[in-house]
Length: 468
Image (cartoon, rainbow, N blue to C red; front, side, top):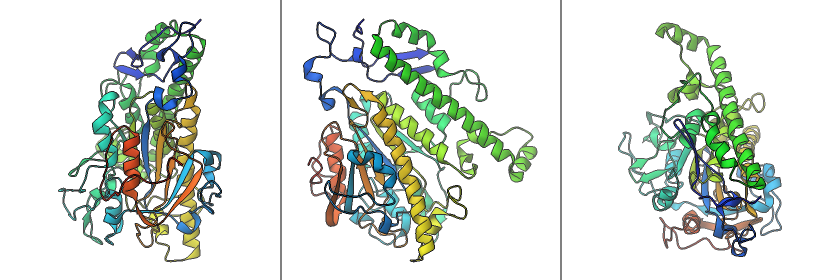
């Protein structure tokens, strides 16, 4: 049996739940024999949209262990980039791009706030923020966001940091945002995997028929609709639908397991127990976004759940634009879960040239790269006709400074993965010499997302060499 034609916008619906679907053969033009029409074969850019995600790593990188050896296709991944070995052909490692507008010597906040805007933030100790520009991700979302259920998806793992960093005279709010819908409006990021999951699959925010502690699965709520759809699909599409539903179920289970584990860990903390006793009621720290930072130790699962949700959002065309912050500026998150004594990310980034601190700094950088590789693997595993979601994406990973000890905006650590729907020639290390505008990369991405522009911030045009 061949699939019967259905709309690309077909949804599974249930009480309070709306689930978008991955691209099925039944959503693509068919000829009289039930085959995908020839003009759509082998042309991933023509049959599916292009997606963009930006993953931000705080505190820069140990550049001595970052840069590949060799350029063009004849390059060897560095120690820090080694987790990307299985994706070498999917990558463009970009060297010697910089953000001139952040070259002010004012620590982390200027580099974070300007990473996707290409501009200099306004110094303030209050809430009157100004980044100087709309970020490039939001420029894209404002032009194409109406095509998807969510215009964009902003995720992270740390709550907004408040107060003033007296060392540099900036409000810490600047360090919590990379996405700006206007120069004065940073976008809030979701840091709780459960609430991020809700944004994708629950049609009414906060609607949980069973309450926070006793939720019916979204798949149970759309089961009848799913059965009706399966009856209309051919064998291949039924398999893909089953794979999708299994993926959603697996993430649901992991979110619930992680919630219980983290809640139990926090209950072991005497300060937390004292607070609960004082209030006289149960507090689930996992489900309070303002308290997620109190989770202890290994946050790898929290990060991977968020990356899984980005992958699902792209696979189902729920959004085509996303950002993710591994941490806020000046994050002191402890990485001793990787190795005893590894310590604080921020502290090790100020290595002062000491070999032991530089070694710890490198290991923390490498962990971040491994999480990036995890997302790329997920996207490459999702098929779209003759291509994959990764083929039809551009996934940027990097930081707003290079060496954290110097707070330098020169030679930023940047990797771009995915083929952008066939518009990028990957598997190369591109070295642009000295101080080439990162804004040229932004222009190139913006144009490949279907939003035509000649300039962005201090750009001089598109970044040369991306297409080969």
